[in-house]
Length: 628
Image 1 (cartoon, rainbow, N blue to C red):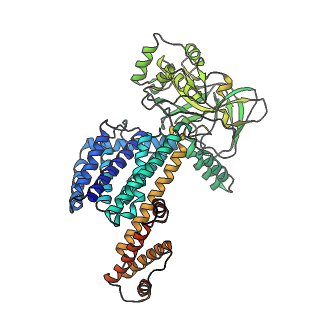
Image 2: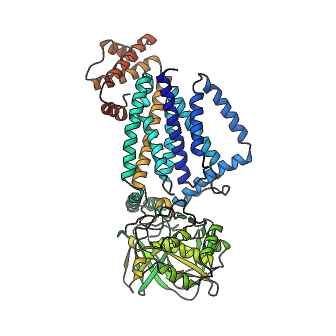
């Protein structure tokens, strides 16, 4: 084995390891999948084994039936099927919590992803080794890596580690920039490959270092709001339905992930108009959350709660520009309503409605409103020596500090409430409300987290509710009155009216102004993923055309490529090629292999000439013009 071949296999091993590890770690972080500690070494061995297997000429014909037999055998194992179903269900549940999608019931679990991620890593390593060592197409590698990138860009959970993101983007970029070089000499391919690796690594490293995740701001929700407003102005019922669909994807999630809550910025975009008959603070609830696992609050989608009015309430009129997916209810609400999944859906697409603001009773809550993870109970029992009354909890939390630039809750921080109490109690309303609900449950009171708006009404005067009125609070169930009581835990009444911006990937889309951390990078990642998929599809289409087309059609495809490359060189293709192209276009006779070889010879000549350009120009020609 010569030096060039050894370097080629080294590149195959490194790219396979980087792409498989980066894809799997990003997916595990975004979808909360469990990953063993030795997974990087596993990816290293998979990449090394895939590169070694590709040395043998007939390995592909052997691996395909072996893989089919292994898949058929392991699919019959209940434990293996359960792992894949758990991972699939976890991904669906994450998207359901973020976008309000209806998903089928799948086996519960925390997302044990060791085996599924290992299978994905093996597939990526084989695809990369097949493309690099065999000098074949990279379409499967780009498809798997780009698919992982798109899933991570759409996921609402914490952004992946920077090093995993770097490996994923670096390996995909190298494959993209060297896709067309695989037909050239191995030495030239190695030189360009290592040069692209160095340049792209410096660029991506600089971007990830200079632009920290805490400073990313997402404007995608603002764009979606503008689109929904424009759809609502369309004539007929279709416009209202389209506006409701656009808003339901961003304003009806059923989970709040507390990981990654970072700096927030208040907004003054108008949301709705409220007219009440009395003056004072008015809580407008949108959704409540009943299940807590230490890091995430979730609203059970099939849970129902029926409100029974007590006496007469005061009418409150609400008016929105477009039909919202959920109705806003004055809290407490004196209307006879049934809440599903902690909210009331706006199935009639109402833009103006009147509800009663007054006392009501609710049925006794289920045990889920009192449940806490064992870790939460253990930490709180170690911190507090005795039970706390609601007054004690209120006094404790109101002693905290309200800030729109809090410290970010780390992914390995354990229980959120314990972490928040131990780190100075600095945050905005969602931090204090989530912690208050946990403390209330720990002291034996059924409690829930609620999101919506806090408005200062004026009697008989329409009040405009803006994004800065978005708010979160806790509620506990009073067994004597059989009703839910508001528990305000955010320091300072003025501060409670400041915006609660919760990331779209972290869940509570009830807040009208959602700013998602990492969105600038995620938007670029999504665009890059789409670009990778488009390039892979174009490469697949071109390969299919060349493989299935007749000799004359292949000659015309090669003639177009020769014209393109000759134009870049500033010259004209030889007259002989033009004659062959005319023959292929108009003559009923088929071109021979020798005549097709003349096109290939000229294309190779053009590539050699273009390869004499500077590295930057070669990079531009390859990346944007698809020459190499």
